[in-house]
Amino acid sequence: MDLKAARIKEGPCENYLDVCCQTPDRLTDPITPKPNTRTGCGYRNPEGIGFRITGHDDNEAQFGEFPWMVAILREEAVAGNDQKLNVYQCGGSLIQPQVVITAAHCVNGKNPSQLKIRAGEWDTQTKNELFTHQDRDVSKVIVHDKYYGGALYNDVALLVLSEPVVLGNNVEVVCLPKQGEVLDHSRCFASGWGKDVFGKEGRYQVILKKVELPIVPRNQCVDALRKTRLGPYFKLHESFICAGGEMGRDTCKGDGGSPLVCPIANNPNQYIQAGIVAWGIGCGEDRTPGVYAAVAQFRLWIDEQLLYNNLDVTSYEY
Image (cartoon, rainbow, N blue to C red):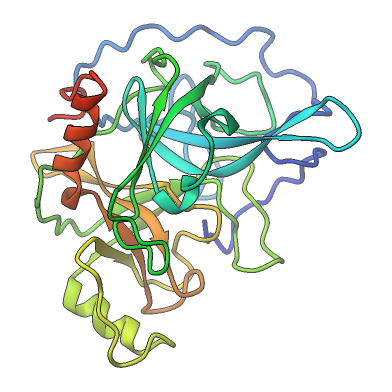
């Protein structure tokens, strides 16, 4: 995520999701999550779970604040030995205990055996958080049949997990909008472990970051994007929505596949996923919105895929 003033924590490991030189444990034993007493999807924990970080950068998410957030990892062998590294591939979100939604461009062409997901993660450089994270292998990758990689049209994919995650305080599903639902909320949230700035100077974040963004009306977004290198004849495909356009506040490289969530009108602490981070012009450019796959355009497709795979479709309804 863009977050110009973000505190970047230097880690000792080659890969930022690995823990190779552990600092002293803050907790000796991670707590097994208790069943969540709340019923329903999309409940954010704005005050965190169990403790609250104070005096932190405003762009650092609280522990468990976005319990649907997952990291999608790619297993890579290390040359010369039998060790394998979990390399960060992209972000995603849990929509059902056995299904993650992400961007097609993150996983297209990947063998499911290469991938795993991590739910309940927060600080990637410690294993001793209040509630432990959960890793699951991916058994199936479902890319939208009309995905076009050249322009990222229909940039959505589903990952079916080898077994369901256990829902609890720090692991929960997000709600999904109805097919064609129009989302005009003024303030939404994107989250991720993406880079702080665009280009090779950027570094991946250690603690999950968040950024508050407005949904940008379609005509306003098109006008803004036509003033970039895309040119005056650019047309925004119907599978996209836009958000952001405020200086220094944006998703960035590495945030692909991560969720953009907006509060439900009659329950402001319950969230639906409006978008999936797709692409943008740079990171955090003033008056240049980021572009997201519009989840409301894919609700019927999502339902169809889950039903075809004998999976419950009620978990993300609100």
